[in-house]
Image 1 (tube, rainbow, N blue to C red):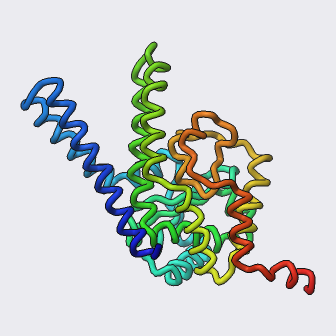
Image 2 (image 1 turned 45 degrees about the vertical axis):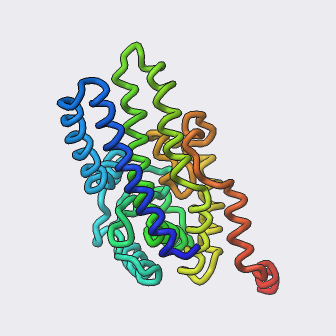
Image 3 (image 1 turned 60 degrees about the vertical axis):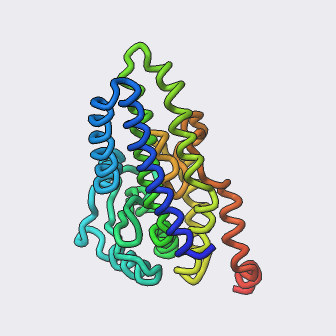
Length: 281
């Protein structure tokens, strides 16, 4: 499937999710109080949908502790990101920094013309230039294919559902038992693991090599075993390049990543002669 067709499908998915939110809340208002309350719920739902669309990326970045990375702080990284964006055919991304040692990367946005990529300080300190290129290319591929459009919308809704259980007081566990499967089902229905494999392939094309990203995936997996993850909402799992949640059972409900070994193998297979060239070197 071409990137254009995939992008169109993701736009349709996003519209359906937001439309479902508006229709569901309006129907709830009708059931609770007839036309008058349904009208109130409709206005609230429309405001929520508008907030998700326009401010969803900012909300997620703030909730995950990311701040914008200024050009003067990392000029080389900004230059690399701009070069990768030109190769990917998307707008130059805004770069954000997560000030923690755990190696993670994620992207949010509204599409090819609006993408923000967040990188942790630990990732920037451990990844060589070729691996950073692969990571940036992967996230830009998500923008080109409009994966970020539906990911940002769905993940924010899932986070809100999980957080809604916290207002339950002594009913919190019961609410979480009900709301978590609903949020996880929304994620699983709309976000296919194939999008990660497709973004990996696209990143290899952008970089003219699959090995930078493959090496980055291996390195991140190794370092994650040594560095503690401070935690975030498990519903954010689909955003990350590699899931940082380990064996967390709640996060596993939201997992949309193929096995890491499979991703690395598929990337290596894009350049089947790499082992022979490595031996010859």
